Length: 193
Image (cartoon, rainbow, N blue to C red):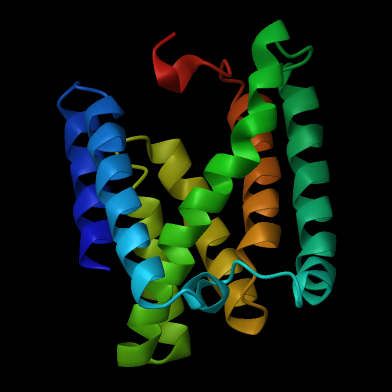
């Protein structure tokens, strides 16, 4: 959890001073690959405990599906009303967002929320994890505002059915819609391209 919090803070700091997120993402990838490899060597079953599992995917999808569909429809409606259609031809890159969403759900839920829940109990851990998740999107106020309720939804769903595959897909869909359709941003904008 400490490494997740440290990299989240570094992510905000480097973005705030104008260095972008690449230095943190690069060093974070190396550090996390080492950590996960070390944990897998110690306990090969740990990915299942984190939520990389299929046995509860149906239950997780039934729980999240209606809410994701309602939120997606709302974002599309607002985006249509705001004139954010048609999307730029580069919007296809957002098809990869569920992979990034799964990574973020790993940090939010498997690393931060699970550990906070041991110390604080469910509701307080959900609130603090969601707040930290939203804060990691600073200094972008629009993303902070959108990710706070999303973090609450995702930690609530994870607590009931810990499945990072379903959460990653939901995060990817809602994140892609929020970025391009709701906020009207170019798909490559955050990458500096």
